[in-house]
Image (cartoon, rainbow, N blue to C red; front, top):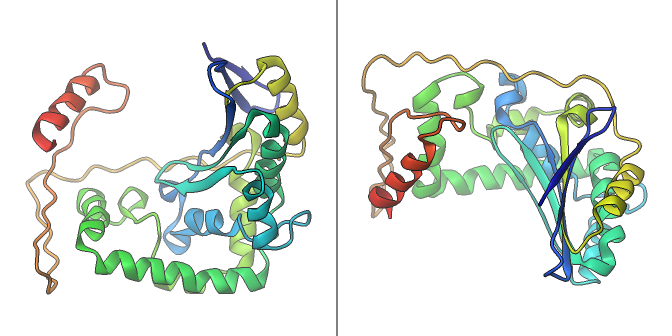
Length: 267
């Protein structure tokens, strides 16, 4: 059974004790992604995620960041979506404190140095090029654009090459300060834990989290009145088709029926 605790600063903590495992997973989710961005900084949420693995004051290099958990056989990664960004670490239960220290450090103290920003721009531009060269991946970028057009819901998570190249350190610092705050963050601890002790440890390691107000997500504007089609010609051996329709929202009771239909139709 899980327990959700909301602190006075708005930080939400979910503890899920699982005595059948010897491991612990720490997941930090912040409510920000491409749907919270403006046109000028589209791609900044994903950019920040990359930079959080480049160094902190305590762990000043990418190697120092990675070897902290590598040396204890830990698993760690991050991801960015339209509405949230996540950072996680999975370790043996005996290394729980180390995982919390590591996740809180990159979440709260990443340096975002000019050197790392410049280097990571090249990495992300190449990532965008790879997505564009892979029709199966690129069709997933074109699909939201077709549905929602030129608004946050229709923009790609990775952003555009022009935006990434143009982005300044001050843009990244400002966005992190606005979005990476207590009321906009959920910390989930699952595994072989004592819930009370885990809660107290989270309070300790995330005591410095900002308590300012985060940005609100712009309302999605629905404009479609007729069937629409988007074609993207490219010389490849295959043609990739994405066909769909608007359906229930995530809270609708029929969403589970729709998921079953998805399996039947899509395999």
